[in-house]
Length: 88
Image (cartoon, rainbow, N blue to C red; front, side):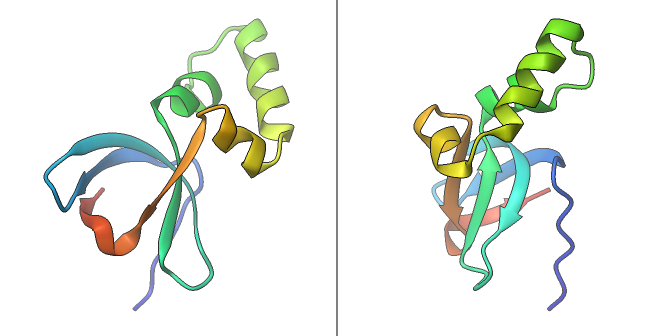
């Protein structure tokens, strides 16, 4: 199966339990088991296209941080691909 992943793509995912949430694509793990995504907080503060200069500067600083730090701050999370019903 071929999966094309475009970092920064924003969509909606539905979990197996029916929960829907917005996500911003970050990456899929090498073994194709997890989707690493930007949370609503991450989308709002890092990926929004209509940011002013101050917001852009903050987004650039956040993008310089490593993934572990972004997870602790709530900007990035992960979900098992098997736990997803759909994502667009």
